[in-house]
Image (cartoon, rainbow, N blue to C red; front, side, top):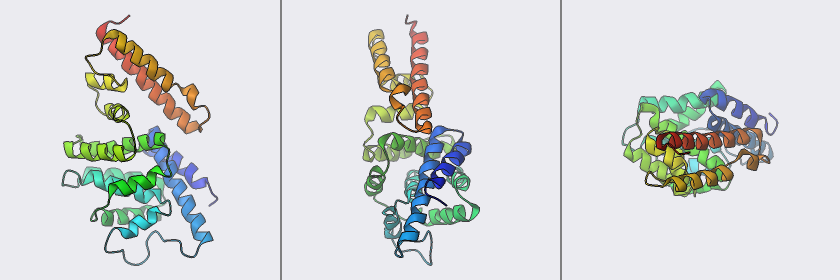
Length: 259
């Protein structure tokens, strides 16, 4: 497999697995990590294997894999942290992760990662270190999309618990994502009246003029034209975010009869 093919295939599979752009992004980074794994394997006799023999008795085995830019392992560790947040691992959440990985890899590799995941769930990790590793290789825009994936896991059983929310919020802080950005991402999963205000970075007590000002600011900041230098999928993600901003403003305008 040549460098870059894994990322391309992962992006395509990620999109069709989730029917969303954030799925395409996650697929891209998983596929890219597989490209890097193959490259490291061919250039160094000391590169790791996905699984060889028995696991380490602690989390160091997986932490060392992150140093090899194994994004898939980082994704599994964060997935496990969200799933264990409320003290129970639900089948719906486990199936969410399994289905995603089955769409990203061949049957053999998916089986290896899923087997890894069962072991990862039994171990504890320092989330700040895991997120720091991700920060070093993933731009903040993609880290924001990763939060959407984590929310998807938490919501797989139909409800995001307070404990799950706290873990995702902690991960967001490690990702250096602002409070406002976190609330905007969160609002994508909660379609109540307040969520539309959060998309614009304001609250329900804001005046009409403040709402208009917030909308103009967000529209300029997230206008798709500002992302022309990025890849096609990133441009699509920016366009989707811009549409969410417009939808929120239109809803508030209608609710308040703003002219």
